[in-house]
Image (cartoon, rainbow, N blue to C red; front, side, top):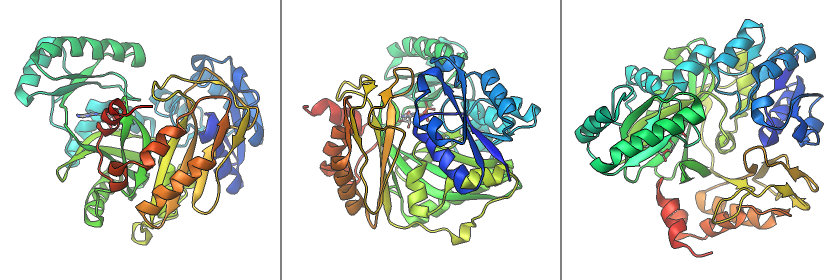
Length: 448
Ligand code: ADP
């Protein structure tokens, strides 16, 4: 087993990983920017090292700074968390080249799955179909026009290197294709340094269903069922649940086994998420994330598995501690992402938290790095915590979420807990009757 893991991240996910390290008797090293000198992950780790100034590009995203921190602290592995360097193949490669373990799949798997066109090809070859669309990259707006005509409107033009809901444009008719193509390309170039785009049929009212998988890198793979992450704004998730309200045990076993077999055949090592759009009983693959997800706790709750621990075991060559036959879901879990932002405008709201109080009680988990007096820096994303509830069924989980949100106090800044309170009281949400466009239309109809 590793003796020291460097956690190349910040905020709640850094704390989550530090916890797992300490429980496993492994030393935890924090890295931080100068803006995060007083952050909780710095305090909770066994050692901390400053890696640069506030902008992420000069600190959390700086491969050489993180690599140097590994060498200085003699860390034998790096856990990248999510975001930042977690899906960067050259970072994974740099660690491999220096004999430091990357807690995640091989650089080659990170690279192949990070290219969404290539990921669709790989999955297709493993009998997992994608959303109908272009076979590969679309080179010109004329090509885009021709393909869109073939598959029928509406279509979505997506960045091959995309993430975080960026680099996507919808065209509902012929006259919108050129503009959508040009905009998707330039946004992709600016955000990901790669302007390659592809086209998919734009599905009308699908659900976003994703399957949690873990491969041991030795030809074995398991699945931990699905999460429904259909509640999104600007293609970004805000609330996730497991099991999915629209997925029954037979469907779960079918799609789960397919995904587990896919990672087994790929020789994939570590945790991953196979994402689908689900409509009318059919699953359409959209992408695979080769890292821990923000929403992993809902799966941990219903399966009783510590996913970070399994990631660390696999990276250390110890294999999985769990077997598919022994895994069963229990009850229902929901996660609400608490962002420091105004509602309903969703403008970031950094600043000092004057009072912080976390909800508690049976079946309530709050993952956060916030404390009373903490200054939320303006430099990073607005996620300040996650409230996760677990109960025997969906209705009681929603009631528990509402109660937990009532208990949550984050004074001094604006946050989105009131949005979730309204959602808990909404009939469609209570009935589990929603899809990926539901939230945006509901926001348009709701007065605040
Ligand atoms: P990212 O990597 O940026 O998260 P994804 O490919 O995972 O991009 O898509 C994110 C979200 O965008 C999906 O959950 C869905 O809401 C929307 N989306 C993506 N592809 C389609 C599609 N073909 N039809 C409708 N919505 C889509």
